Length: 85
Image 1 (cartoon, helix red, strand yellow):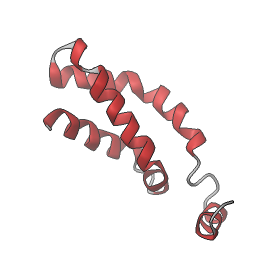
Image 2: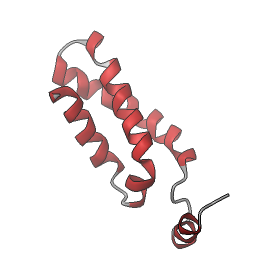
Image 3: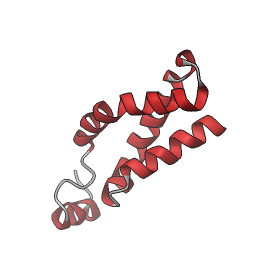
């Protein structure tokens, strides 16, 4: 059962909170995340886990960031924090 708030948001902007769009996003961005991770780490063996963690965090935040149309910015921030932390 959909909550009334989500139903209202979906009515205002079709597709909001639609996690079905995430696999397409992840597929399109995964290679770039790994490439940038390599530039930050300099080692291909150390980039897969942080790249996957970045995508996992983007998935969790998807309803918020898709609504704000800030998916790429959020992913860049998470990725950078993963490598700095």
